[in-house]
Image 1: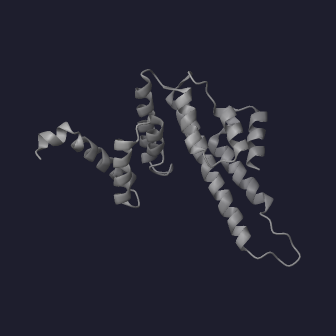
Image 2: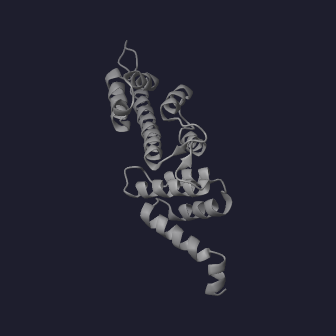
Image 3: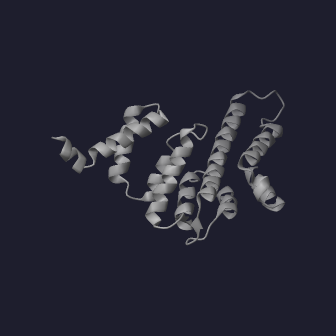
Amino acid sequence: MDASSLDASRVTVYMKDALTIMLENRPQNPLVFLADYFHMVTQVKNPVNRAYRYIKLSPQDRAVFMDNLVAAFTMLESDGGSAGLTGEEYMKLLQHICADFPEETVRILFQILGKADKERVGFQDFLGGIKACMYFEEFLGEAEDLFLHHAVEEPAPGSEQSVPSTALDMLIEELASRTHVQDRQTPSSRNEFVRACR
C-alpha cells in the first residue's frame, strides 16, 4: 500500500490524531486507548458520545483537560452549524456525565444548569456546566470512599457506626466552593444544592 492510498483513506490523519491525543493525555494503557480511539472514530457516529469520550480522556486537574474540552465543544459546535451548540446537545452531554448520580441531585443540578433545546450554549456556559458535573462526580467518589473507609473500621462497643458530619460538611463546602455555586446562584438555589448533597 502506498502513501497516496493511505492519505485517501484518511489513515494517516487518524494515526497522527491518535498519537497526538495519546501523547497529550498519557493514558495508563496506551494499547487500550488506541483501540478505544479507533473504535470511536469508526463506530461512534453520535457527536454527543464522541464529545463525552473526549471529556473523559484525562482527569480535570491535568492541563490537557482544557484542550479536550475545547475539542469536544468544537466537535458539537461544528455539527450544529452556528455559534455554540444547542441546549439539547448540551443537556444530553451532561446526562452522560451525570448518569450515575442520584436522581434528586441530577434534577437540582439540571435546574441550575439547564438550557432550552434550541437555546445556543457558548463555551463559557459549556465549560461551567461540564466542570460542575465533574466536580460533583469527584465529590460523590470522595463521599463513597469516606463511607467505605468508615464502614471498614470497627465501631467502638456500644456506639453507632456513622460518618462524622463534620467530614461530610467539609466535602459539601469544598464542592460548593469549587463549582462557585455561591457566586452564580441565589442563596435558595445554593441551599437546595447543599441539601441535595446531604
